[in-house]
Length: 146
Image (cartoon, rainbow, N blue to C red):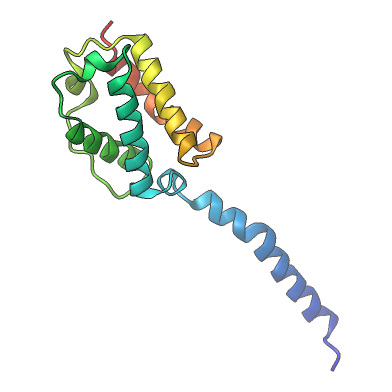
């Protein structure tokens, strides 16, 4: 049985649409949360970042006397929420949460470098790291005190 030319063309067009446009649409419609690897990957990224920051001689004073587990959970919820995930950050506003900590621009930048490395270590692509950085950068003035 010979398939009419019009049907062959429709079939080929459908395959082309699926192969070339379908996957691109799926990638474009995924959230940053999904591209970060979801809640468990975000939790691992935050834990690694805070562990590094809390033990670095340049930043560890910020964490003295602070229980790390609640901080990790709060930061995890914040990143989850701002990246489009299902979480709700119910912590204090950034300025209030960091008030009195005396975080310098140099310390902030070091924490940012640790976050970037943790994202890389957990398989996050550079474009998604940049997207997250754009979301976090406006918070810098609320966190830095000196």
